[in-house]
Every structure is written in C-alpha cells, then in structure tokens.
Image 1 (cartoon, rainbow, N blue to C red):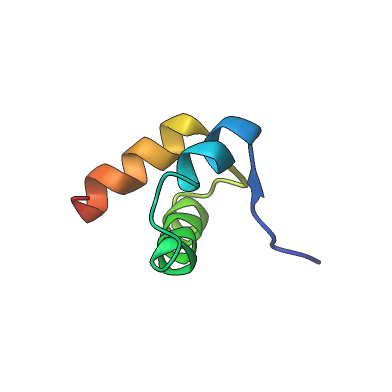
Image 2: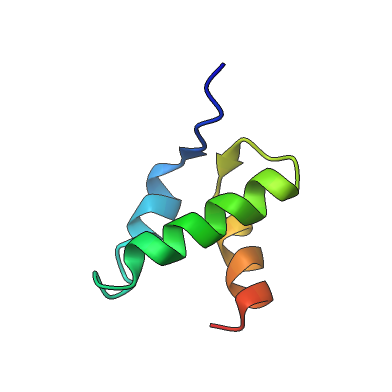
Length: 56
C-alpha cells in the first residue's frame, strides 16, 4: 500500500512560491503534518494550516 500524499494543483503551485532550496524540506514537513492529521490530500487549506503550525 502506498502512503503517498496527493497534492492539489493549487497547493502544488503555492509550494512553488517557497525558495527551491528549502522546498523539499517544506514538502516533507507539510506531508508529515497531513499524515499525522489523517489526511491523504494536500489542499490549500492543509498547506496553510501546516504553515501556521511551523510559523513560516
């Protein structure tokens, strides 16, 4: 079973606003946040919640 997290197009676009050199770490953190919250898809809302939690 794959536990890959799916990103919506909008959330993916928002992720691209993050500087490329920190993007992989940000993606991991957001995906971990989503998984811990029992979510399987990253939406803009999930993205914003995760960002708030990490204070960035």
